Image 1 (cartoon, rainbow, N blue to C red):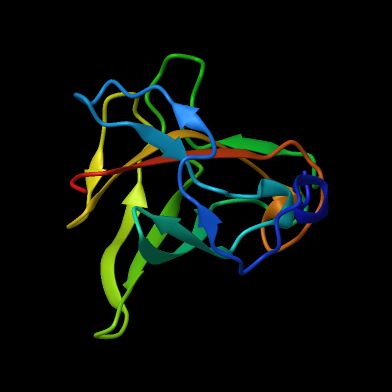
Image 2: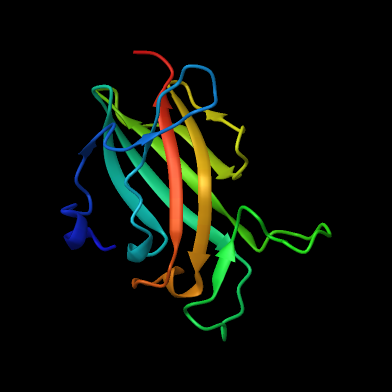
Amino acid sequence: MNAAATGRTPGTAYPFGATYLSGTAGTLDFHQLPVEPDEGLPQTFDCLIGGTAYDFGLYANLDAAADDPPQTLYDLAAPNRIGAPAPSPGYLVLRVVRLGSEGPHVEFLRKLVAEPELVHHTERLAIRLLEARLARGNLNGRGHYGSRIVIGVAQLWA
């Protein structure tokens, strides 16, 4: 889905809580971040969470052959479905910057791991990567190739 199809404008702050993601991490209410996989990676967007503005940056480090077709999907959460351990084809990196009167403050810059119970923490947020399927065509490119990235975020305190 592109930004026009969702009514989203790139670079615009979106109200937190548009989509609820059930959370198993205690009583935290996780909400889906407005990642637009069809816009490709890297990607940045602003999001207002609990009255605080955040700037999110997301990129992929992917070991993909240059001659792979654009529709080739890489499941970064389950790199090997055969059963034998194997290295992942890549990973996502998320940067979270809190915007405030004292200037921008980097709260989080880390590789994300898609494990059901793993919760990453910043000073004020909890973050979960729930799904990470990236098509070769969305690596530095736009288009509808079947990429799906689902990241949940919750406030740690109000």
